[in-house]
Length: 151
Image (cartoon, rainbow, N blue to C red):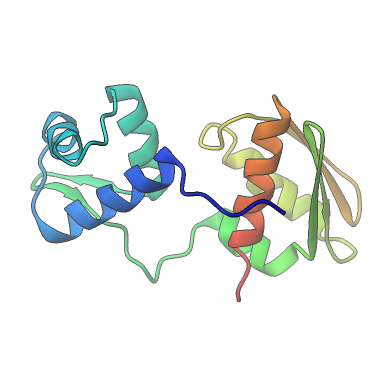
């Protein structure tokens, strides 16, 4: 297995979290300028996606980090139902206990607009077939779902 590398996205996410934890940031333009100072340029569409993926909240005072104790519905569903995940080309095969495929599939479908590359799901009794638009999106989603499991 090749050594793990930190992607530009991961570096940007870490910087956004650090910046928002240390100061008040009122808008995306200000955030983009702060990131550029650190050599992490990003356009408005990228910043919008990053903020959504990180669960950053927009308040009247500016951006706020999500409550670290809050668990979103997809994470809750993964922790309750997901027992295995495997990426195969542009698809994922998710294993659940009997009866767990439908609730996990529903949680994934509810997040479809927030999960980059997710086309849809098909649920059986203990297996969910997840169809992604690209093999890369499938691998990324597989890693994300596994990362949501308790350690």
